[in-house]
Amino acid sequence: MTKSFLVVGFATLLAASVSAQSARYNPEAETSVSGVIRYVISAAAPDGTVGVHLELRTTNDGVVRVHLAPAMFIGMNNFSFYTDDTVAIRGARVTRDGTTDIWARLIVKDGKTLVLRDEDGTPRWPRASVEDPDGCGVAHGPIR
Image 1 (spheres, rainbow, N blue to C red):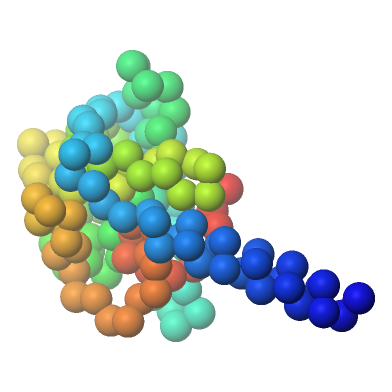
Image 2: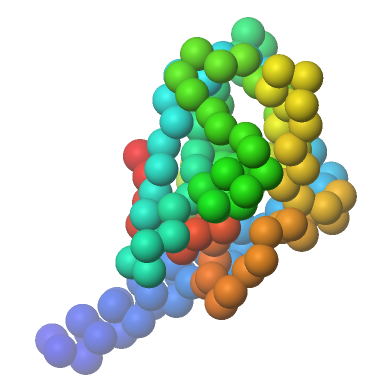
């Protein structure tokens, strides 16, 4: 009984690890969306860093989840995001754990553009050893 529990536990851990590793920014999956921010969601990591996510109401795609960047990076670039702001986003659709969201490469608000990633998807913020960020640059639990 103990051996089968260990095998099942290891297989589950391995599957989660493979799933997480396969979530990568793919420039070929880039798309553009625009709309009104429904929610700004912050996700804190155990080390105190905070990642910023948006839930965006679009005219063509309905509601879309968007992963931006660490809050510190956004603030250092004199940007902020609030409910009911209108934004345009260019980013890649990324599927992770059965959910497809957009990892933003750039975002436009009030005529100003914040570039979050290079064209190949490399984040512009300094990266410590963040293991498998979900696109916001901060390792944290799932956001639902």
